[in-house]
Amino acid sequence: MDYSLLFSAYLARHGQHGWSRQRLLHECLRSAIRQGTLAAGTALAPSRALAEELQVARNTVLYAYEQLASEGYVQSDRRGTVVASVPLQAASAQVIPAAVQAGLAQRVRNLRTPPTAAHLAGAFVPGVPALDHFPLALWRRLLDKAWRSLTPAQLNYGDAAGEWPLRVAVAEHLRAARGVVCDAAQVFITDGTQSSLDMCLRALADVGDTIWIEHPGYAGALAAARGASLNVAGIEVDAEGIAPQPDDWLLRPPRLIYTTPSHQYPLGSVLSLSRRIALIEAARNAGALIIEDDYDSEFRHDAGPLSAMQGLADDAPVVYLGTFSKTMFPALRIGFVVVPATLAPAFAQMRAQSSARGRVAEQLALAEFLQSGQFARHVRRMRRLYRQRRDALVAALERHLGGCVTLHGVSAGMHLVLCFRDQSWSDVAISQRLLEQGMVAEALSTKATQGSLALQGLMLGYAQVPAEQMEALVLQLAAALPAVSTTKAA
Image (cartoon, rainbow, N blue to C red; front, side):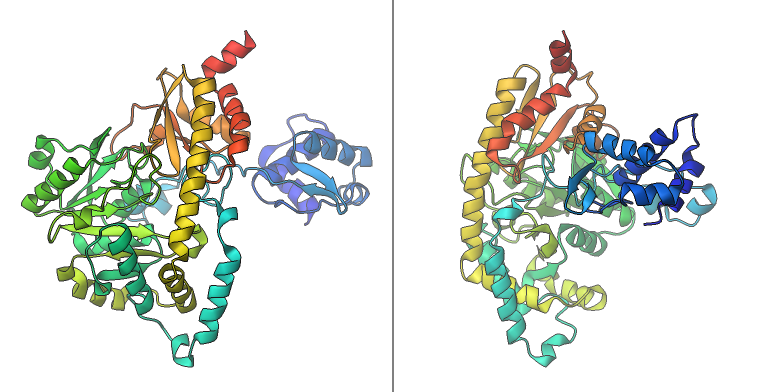
């Protein structure tokens, strides 16, 4: 690391403000750590060497290091002063010059900046499983077995629709576990839910067609819809899930309907059986297709899972999406789409022309993981673990915040939502305050799919948070809320 260049660049951007050299160096190093320029685990230069490089007194460097240590940005080990693991500072929104914007399609200009970085982990990042409980040794063995079994021919480009053994295994699993009616020819392997959405929206709708997306809803679906230049209609959600009204069918009839019926994202409601059947029949009558994202379907804590919409009616107008990122681990990047039998030939042709082909060994290992019963065993273990963690979080929230919030979506999934009873509180400001303390609690109001969202609250993912840590974390969260922190100050 060229510290003199780093220091000069900092001064050029921020000026000196009349600050002492000690404070300037401290601010420079802290900024570099928060922005990831000095990554976690990096050993800083010895104080004497850095003082010589910057031509400052050694006490200046010692002061900066001591301040960083007191704030938790660095720690000492056998290598000296080492950068600690801290949340990275979100990049500030920048105005794109008009000349640059002129070169962008309108669909790209409308994309949102994700509220948090995808690589963050810990409390309370939603959608991340308990990675330390995944049977990694078993997975390594399955991968090794798959690689050893590969023939030279399998090192070539793979099947665009996915490896046949995996398609067979996915179809068998879905028939047994989710009541999906399909055969392997209807299953297409993708890189995950976002890849599935992009493919489906391009294949199933034309520019300007209307897609219904739950409001509030999944930002990835909104991004895919805008990327496909579709007209987005946000449909309100209630305690039973997506709730289209007669005027919605009349005034903005959909070509596609995107829904997360097993655990609505983000509010967590479960689409009732009666409403599932009614939505299927209404979509059929309207000539629309339902895109069923079976998000969090594996984790029902207080009752057995409802069958997938896809299998509730003969020839249901449903395209079924799933992923292994939430049940296994996100880096696997394997999801799937199940299309109606009449659409399978067209999807196969489209995939042959446009999809990436590869990762044969990973797909074969996953096929064996499914067919050997190891996947089902892993899901059962995680279901028990997540129920324990959910119970610990709910108990702590009721103890310390029962009078300030209401809880939603606690019966299923890997996250819950707390809504503020005082809707004058800013969930964005509270979320940012918590992020600065190392806690990721996404603001509910940022999940609007159309217009704005009046609800103020936080999403709390609990799957990767040990039950014994919940009490302390909830107390930390409570201290960031206006009513609780004001009461403590008084």
